[in-house]
Amino acid sequence: MPFIIFDLEFNQDVSSLQNFDRKRSPYPFEIIQMGAIKLNLEFNTVDTFNRYVKPTFYTRINPFVTELTGITTEQLLTEEPFPKIYEAYTTFINESDSIFCAWGMSDITELFKNAEHHQLSHRFLPKRVINLQPYVSTHFNFSQKNLLRLQHAVELLHIPITYAFHNALHDAFYTAEIFKKVYNSSIQPKPYDPSHRAIRQKHQKRIIDIDKLLQQFEKIYARKITAEEQEMIKLAYKMGRTNQFLKDV
Image (cartoon, rainbow, N blue to C red):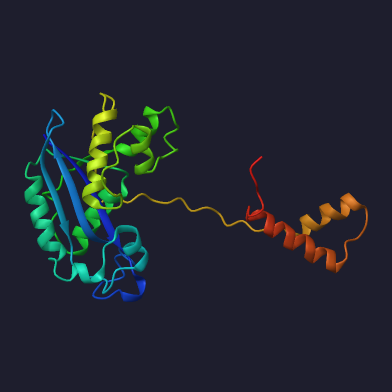
């Protein structure tokens, strides 16, 4: 029962989308690098995986992604496309009772989505997962809603920073080191159903009741508000709702 500690890097460049049915997902996050560390039950590294992926859906790498990861369009042109890398990845995983472990659920979700986009089977992917991120918040007695960035967690746990972040293999390595530091019996894998889609609760649209707002000001000042004052009040109220003028005290 090995742990597959993994990380992904994605690309999304709306202007260069091609060969993709947008009914499935308007603008997919396309995997461009897959990195993983395989740990045995004693938390020893038994294998590693690091492959770059030739894009299929986008013709170029978004400049922001290049700035963040260092991955360029030209670099990926000689790589193999996702189906070939996916086949190699499932061979690397090998054991059916493996457990996925990642920093946040987005990488797990997008891995399954990318497989679906390429009409590839999920059956070789682990269906038990550990999202390490909230457990690290608990480790530091933070609320589980206070989710730390990977680099922040590495720094708090005094893990030596020997590699650059935002590289799939490097980030998988750091996630594995964090896992070793914080693991306890409360950290248990949970079943993952890739077909489950959380239903977002629709919230009733709310608008400003301008009449009541102005009536309140007329009540305060005990007089009618002029048209110019009405416009100033409405503008000030809308600007205040953006929170752009809040400051720390």
